[in-house]
View 1 (tube, rainbow, N blue to C red):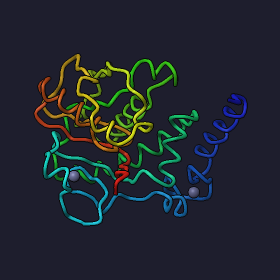
View 2 (view 1 turned 30 degrees about the horizontal axis):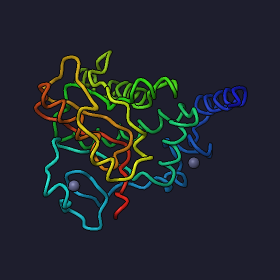
View 3 (view 1 turned 180 degrees about the vertical axis):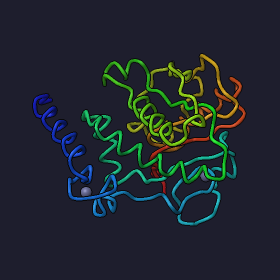
Amino acid sequence: MDWKLLSTQKIREIYYRLFFRQCYLCQSPSKQIFCHHCQQGLNPNLICCQQCKRPSNQPQSICGQCQSNKPSYQVCIAPYLFNGTMRTLIHQIKFNHGGHFIRPLTECICQNLVSEYQSRSWPQQLLFVPSHPKRIRQRGFCQTQLMAKQLHKQLQAILGKETPDFPKTNPILKVQYSQAQHTLPRKARLTAPNKNYQIQGQIAEHVALFDDVMTTGSTIEACCKQLLKAGAKRIDVWVIARTPDKTH
Ligand SMILES: [Zn+2]
Ligand SMILES: [Zn+2]
């Protein structure tokens, strides 16, 4: 890792953000976070299951998996598909010290949340799906924690007192170390046991559960089951991007 190069890039980006109104990715003039061209590389998740937001070919339908096994959460908000520019950005954040991409990404989901919650009440608490402490030590950070923290800040600027509470210590703990989800075959991901997660701390009745990417939904489901046991009555899932199943 060339730290000198990285910090030079970072300074350049901050400079651009402060002095110019430019696209966060390509630095061409733009009043939005991403210019029109870069925006086209982000694919909105429009045609999907109404419940779990799994991308599908049939609009306004409920997928087979939700019909046979109703999810434990009430609402799922997943505005983008995990491909194209979105995939690159999330990979940069996770594996290539691309922390400066967190803000534009959470701004995107923040805008979506504000429009989704015009006719709903906001959750009381914002929680996130954590990585295992061992993985956090390997990477040096927990990306979902950084994203949720930034999202909370952005929501606070818009909602003020209505903003969901963001606990100092996330009450969801990952206690079982498992192989990184993206390296496992689908079947192994679906059988991930609920005991991977434990709850320690106060859980509100209405919570938002944040994760960056949702694939099969088994991780989210495992956390939801524990949250319901710990006193949550209603869970709204907030993810930035949704991956289509490999079988689709
Ligand atoms: Zn651009
Ligand atoms: Zn579904």
